[in-house]
Image (cartoon, rainbow, N blue to C red):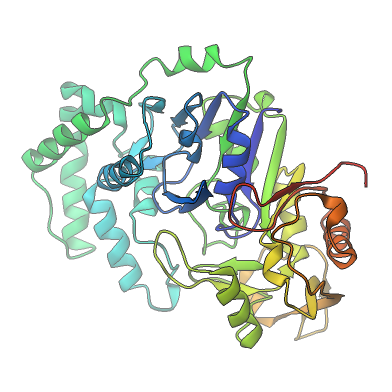
Length: 428
């Protein structure tokens, strides 16, 4: 296997954990390079279901080292809860490592996130209220805390003297929230230091150098359309889920990346606010939601559902650096008579047709999808393991998607279990 980045090619929730889990068996090192506990990944294997939020799903393999990189943000209480839940399922964490440069989500970040969402009105983003955005805001504002600060009283003390008065002033006068005493934050940090100590990798540079000639898998969270620079801004996350983000958040440069696999559902889902041109607010949308069990792993919120959108997928291939696509949940369409694919958008104000993605999301309310209709295959795909055994209409659907997005499909998922996967031949 090449050094590979696995990214979401839509708005997240595409099934990245399953693809990461499949590839992890061949990897020596897995690096989660951005995002935080706002992500939710589910892996089904050997009759068990594992739910991940921050810890790389490759932790299920004993030989694989799993590294939470500098580009991530870590909420200690959520991290501890995830550890305990996975330990209860028999997961071993001897190969889990955390970058000392990863940022810490503090309690006030979550308070600010919740307040901002509750008082945003029409400007509501639809965040998970996990404090991710405020943590990244402080990181970029150079007033955040990193894991390494927990192990230097001098650094922590100096930072608190600089940061806390400003933070308390903002909490009180901007948000109407209570401030924190220095003693309270120091006590919290002492607790956090004990929690992270078994996993912090202070010799991360040596570790990365040792693995330079081995197989590396980079694991992203969320999806291209939630990227803070290239997504449906401002209805985005606060980091860079695109393939290029791996070269920032992991500690390795771009020359280490040899392949980028974009994971996409055979339809589209979205959680939270923001534009969604192919969204189906009808019986078909409800049918996709029901069959696909489209509810968020992190929040439990029902996901908005719609037909496959080749416009955003073609855009994701470009800005995400995608070299190959993993198409998941194609089996959801097993009972459908017809399946639609969005090939372009039409502006209902002036009949202008868009075949490339319009990045001004405030015009999206005027856009209507232009569809091409494909015949369904009307048979179950869940037990098929070879491309040659797929029904002709399923093959035609795959070929049409490839043609529209300009990238090859290399993996097909026909169910949630690890075994329900088809690796497609390059020439077919």
